[in-house]
Each structure stands twice: as structure tokens, then as C-alpha cells.
Image (cartoon, rainbow, N blue to C red; front, side, top):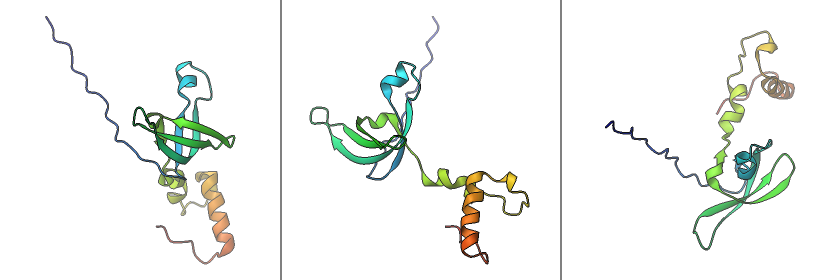
Length: 125
């Protein structure tokens, strides 16, 4: 008899979030019911530990509607790193004469900073 293939469980490192962190989170019920609007952006307000399960949960502010969301399970949250949000600006093709090659966010950032001091761009961190 053929042996069943062994499957390895996906192990995701536990992430601890602090007040002010931006996260992507899922409304689990909407997701499993196949309803739209289940993935949202939030900002961490606080964390707390459930007395019975000793599991950490988070209270968030849903940014699209400035709505409080309590008791979000961190298994359904992912960090939104600043480096990802700023990637288009950090990699803007400054040697290109056509700003159409840049994303609107990169163009807006460059215009804002060049308007202040056109002699130099700020140094990259």
C-alpha cells in the first residue's frame, strides 16, 4: 500500500505589535462567508491577554472608516512595513526624464521635496 505524503505545517513566526503599528487584518467571519470587504488596514491601539486562554488579542482602529475593532486575533494580522510603503519612492528612476515611469506617490514626494530646496534631494536612510 502506498504511503501518504507527509505534509509540513506552515509555521509563521509570532509577531508582537505595539501601539501605532499599521497592520493588514481580516474580518474572519466575512472572509469565510465569502463576503466582500474582509481585508482591512488598521492601526494597533492596544494589546491584551484573554484571561482563560492566555492568548494575546489586539484592539485596532480600522483606518478606512476610523472605526474601533476589538479583539482581533493576531493569526489574522500581518505587519505593513514602512519599507514596503516607501519602495516606489526609494526606487524611483531619477535619471528618467519622463515622470510617467514613476508612480504617482514617487512624483508627489519628489515635487514636495524639490519645492523646498531644489539644490539637493534628502539623503536616503
